[in-house]
Image: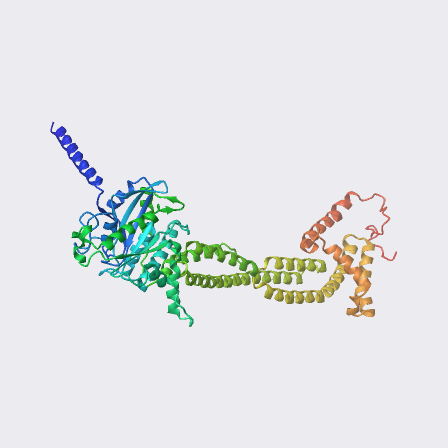
Length: 605
């Protein structure tokens, strides 16, 4: 029983809490923070209350954001646009402790029909810049985020337009443009906010606000090429993203006693202000359009998702507060593009021809620069980053050139050494053969020319020509002499074979004739030099080359094996075969063989 009562009690408590939560969520007629500063007041974080107010919207969303200096009347201006008192709407600084920290949204959107599309318009109040206890980086983040999120960006300025105001807005526009590109990893165009220059001043005489804006954004002549003036003009150029989307409007002060503004009714305010305020409302309504991202409008959930992605990109990294952050934000992109180039070049198997390496380098560099162009931040300030990337790529390319040269030298040296060894082996052939030497010479040249690549090839080709020339000269010089000695030795061997092994007198006689010719006639009638140019010698050489080397048989390689087989066959024939076929009545051979029966007789008989 007690357990049942416990469950019933828990049920009622949960029901009570849920009804309290639902009643709290339903009360959207108030301001909610959507972006808050972190404890260090340098970065931004999301606030769930304001996001819940936006998520529930299913219509296309448009946002009107007011940016400007600290205590310049932004919150009061938004209350005036929403027709709310200071006690109902956004907190006003002079009546309370500053409540606008980060970015706040009015929870109940204004429903409008824009070009036949029902649109929910949210009004955003931003924390003013140049206040005490904050860094410039924090102000830049607020500016950039408001610029990206809004459909109409009201730049609320007191009295006049300062150079710092131009610089700050230019930076915010560039930063916002970059962040949107970084979300998707590419430069996807989004519809920029309509910029409304709102200047609140005590006097309306003199130049119009439009003239003031045009004059502030006009290029300053720089005939002497002053770098500082160039930077100022570059800042003005960066506002080209807003281009025709900018409008100027002046608003007089509502009352001399500004600290009592929240307590005054419209009848007590300056009537010129009231008239101008109503005109401002119409101007704002006329320029409001749904927020367009990637060609489509955003509903509540999509708007919050877009905000989350932008904030994530905005909070990345530590950013110094020393002016332009273009190079800082591009640093990681530069590293990524340089890594892209390095990965592309690392895939190349070295060594390769210099022309091929140069072509691959140019293609990889173009791909890297294209990637940077698609991702980089800043339309005018990115030139320095591009130059940095180009310099880094060229430095890295020099390393690849050196690596290619080293690998080329290593490969060509190995091939050169291999050819040198082959030439040395051809110099000491058992059976000298010009045909075999020429075949090895040709193969070595072809393999070297095909396999040796890269910048070292030319140098090693020159070394190859010298080495091969010396090897060929040395071989030719020794070839005739070695062949002569081989023929002398061959004639003596054949004398022994014909006399004692085969006992074939014609072989013995032929061998003796060859021996006598080589050792006597050539020495008596021919000099060694003239011998090698004699047609008879050429015939001997041609016969020798035919026997020693051909594509089918390399006698030098198989000389020992063939000699061994020949000896075995001779022994078999001498010892076994002749015994089986010995004639009973003496030899009947017509060949002049030695007769065993007459071994004791004199050879002259």
